[in-house]
Length: 123
Image (cartoon, rainbow, N blue to C red; front, top):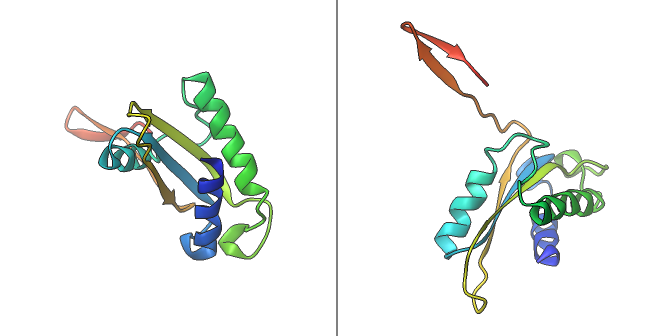
């Protein structure tokens, strides 16, 4: 699985505006894997999965991808990804879909609440 992720990042090179955030969906149906990979992009940089084994996998992915040397904008360097987030779904062992979504460094997430008729940014 790690080899597949690394090859996907190598194939993408600088075309995804690195440094990226990787959202990775593993398991479920192919559609569920893609949904989970997109959902994973919404987690904050540095936030690890609550499952210790998946948290360890996320750290391993970040380390391995950054060792590829693709770097910012694909021009070389130590930072190809800012983070990697993994979401897992149950699946049959005969089928293990993996979906990878790239979020560029400008990936922005924000939250707001409507209070007393005005918006208040909460994140």
